[in-house]
Length: 355
Image (tube, rainbow, N blue to C red; front, top):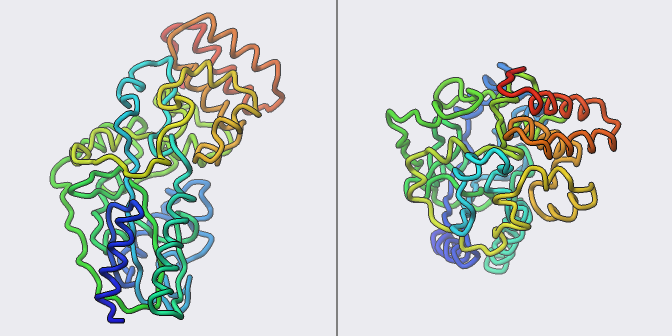
């Protein structure tokens, strides 16, 4: 079968499986490799040691899978219109904000299953199809690949942005030995806009297209395992898992469309939960209520640590102080106790800034 006919079939299959975009590109990521190495040299990755663990394999696809000549990049929207408005949650200090991508079923399994279905269909068509499918699961420069494949451009906030669909989407890839015709690289439409840089609560976007992950709330609440630096706690506000501020203000997200995938519907009213309710979950409740979501990638310790910071930043309330003190009696972890003590001090001393 001619590769152009197969390419059209793959596009059709991807649409049937709920993907909102697909593109084909080569494996030349030399410019992106330079950017990656500079970013690592500046230690912007913090404790994300996996970013440097595999050397340049992340930017050289044929080293990750020998024989790779093309990459098929897929995009799947996750935005749900029935989700409680992000701005309303962020403006209510007694609620906990969870990044909207994490409200439904874990995207890793949702996308991976569909990518393997497509791979099987390709193999049924041509046989002897060599491939590997990835969903944020290996050393892959997924945003750089998607940009080359025409699915969007890497914006000043370092997220991939699509002209017709904003940035509320996931990415997945299939590395293949089939020599498909490549698509045109996406054009950058950020222009003079700098709203994402200006809105960042912790000033993590230190320059256009440069993110110091060590300052990013997504890193601080998800990737960082130990103590959250004092200097960022006030700025974190009520964000307890990730942060969407730079996406919320992005003008291109007015064009974002709702997902066609039912698995991304939110669970247990996690789109607008109260901090106290979440803080009072037992470890068993935490695991059950976040099962099969991306939230479950953090530990119960991190969960309580993040919420303690949120409660510290909440409206002064005697119930908050009571919950903090009760939880403190139950635990022995010194780092978590330190965060609870910080929150108690914030709750008992109005207008105190101890960052």
